[in-house]
Length: 509
Image (cartoon, rainbow, N blue to C red; front, top):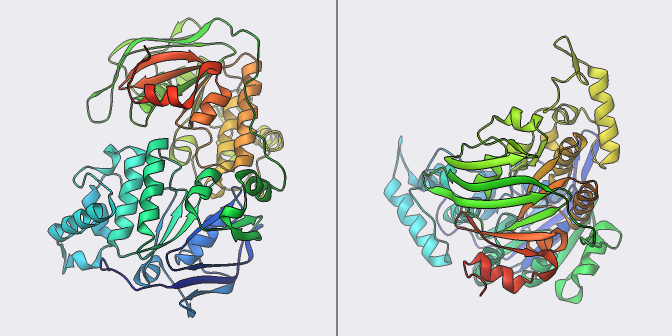
């Protein structure tokens, strides 16, 4: 492994079926990809896309059906079997060890780097440099993974997969963590790479599907509902085939004036993980009944701002007030008690406890309140009733509220977090990338929920790199650059060109 891998001229899946308790994840799925081809695999969250690719990578065994490489049936018992055949996958949720360096993460999978009980780290560094230069994928080989932004980690995953010799590449939501500029660069890179590789591209972003793929296969509830050439269909056509109905993303058309200042940050200075000032004198004002969009390229202080507001990161100086009360450097529990809601950037590690059930996750912030406990004992009936009510109200699709939250699709995990935060009746809500990696149906639902809370007087700080999302939902848009707000403009006056210039640090004259 770590060489160039076997040449694959065709890959096919025939009649793949996979059942889990209470769920038929894949129902007789067939698809095929040719040499140098990009196949887009699309569908709603929970349609079976990731399950299908996990079968192809040897992480799951199919109940029925077969995998064919160059017309020959394969039986992959583990990911190492798939890698040996020249197939590699970059997962949506990265398979990296945070407290190891980039080089050490790559070395873990490279058999060619093993010299008895020792690792040949020089050989690993050479391989990383070779792959990085060949494919235009710069990485910081000696940086620890935990120090890298989400976008940088995604690039490390890609380099790692190529270092292991992949000739057939599966990308699961590869742009969900990238900025628009990084996304454009990745699409150009992948087009170049198809001279040497075939690609299965899983995405919910239909304009990217149109830009990159040759063919498209659409799954709905575990079945193939469409196969065809991408060029023959518009994004609206593909969205309708995915969901079974026309999808219209809502816009903020509210004409009413926003209320008084609700969440106010003044001269905020906060350090990042590497010790630098991630926020350097930031000023921000969110009003009640307002959606304030925060636009910016990843790594300009968005994460540090969200964590400082919610008591997860200390501030060096400055102030934060919620409804006139100081909340800077209070603990998370105290900030929650003041009326703050929070949809974090990483839903799987910060938004839920994956091993806890859905019903337990829905009361994570309130299990100690009289509504759900009495004399230190949990009121299990109340917790069950709460979960069933929120499951119906927020359309959480699951076999049971006793199901482990980590087993849900990305869209349904996000609905669990949204249900928990909004059911608490917050005064203000910080929503960080609330639709990252979600299909258009889930995106439409979450946008409608945010607009409904705005109309109820909740102040929402919407942090996103999706400019269309920011422009559709925001009353005002603040642009953050190098830890400061460069400008705040009315949502109705915003254009992609103007926001793009501000995000690059060019201030309006």
